[in-house]
Image 1 (cartoon, rainbow, N blue to C red):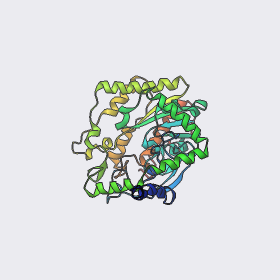
Image 2 (image 1 turned 90 degrees about the vertical axis):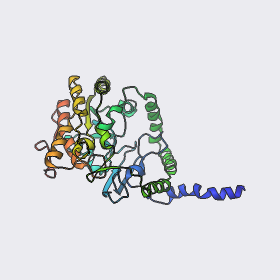
Image 3 (image 1 turned 180 degrees about the horizontal axis):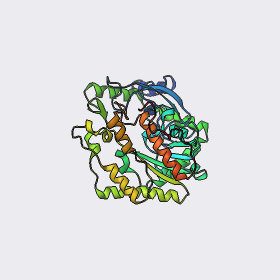
Image 4 (image 1 turned 90 degrees about the horizontal axis):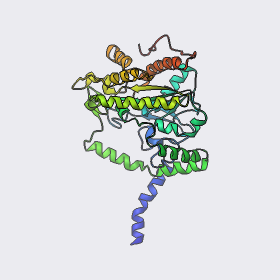
Length: 365
């Protein structure tokens, strides 16, 4: 009986090892994010495997492996800490979500790299991550950046954690992550163990079955795909706006105590800028209301909302991929111009902005 049970279990034991040691890392994935993201080994220093250089033809997150997918060749680099950077220098540091990481963008198209060209300063992408993770990370305490820019896609702004939330977890992750980052052996072991737990064939098979039986992972209007649809443009109460402003003001104060400038970069939802494609055609007002509160509190922010609206609604410039909810390379260039101007003023120096004469480059016109 034991022998039969062992034979029955053998394929389930051997196959994950085949995936890790024989097949290409991206054999069952549709984009690099899933390929190199940390799955279960949360003791690692960053969200991705460190010291990776990879190229891959990717598809958008909303309709992968469907007729609606738009394929695109992208390139990724990760640093020794598992963040998407070519090096670890950080005069200006970006904290944010997958938009700052650069989902469906090639390395040179990420906000960190485009902004670095504009400013002639070292810009570091600390994403996905939170302010509390930054404050608990020892390497930034030893060599702090001159400015921290916290960014968030609109739909996740209400969930930004206040200073001190989950602080212990961030400190513990910094401790274990530092040990692993400084040991090639530990790094190799944890990456290997994490890859074993991913079960790529299983997850791809389940996704294919779900699509075959009609389960959609996307919302579609007028040949554009959305992650939330109408829900994304719901109204927030005045009390909720005040609470969010409190959180962002807390970020400013925590950084000011350390002599670091703070700036907030909200990124509008695709549903926000493309609201006329939705059934209700309801124009959202969350970001304008929040920015008004931040202005009252003297919290520095970058208004991408107005510029994005003008480009899309007046010039019909696409700012998001049709099959994805993240911003595209054009939106990143526009945001980088706006951010560079604010950084120049905030730091009070002559920061070179190579594209200051024109807000929109020739390929946007």
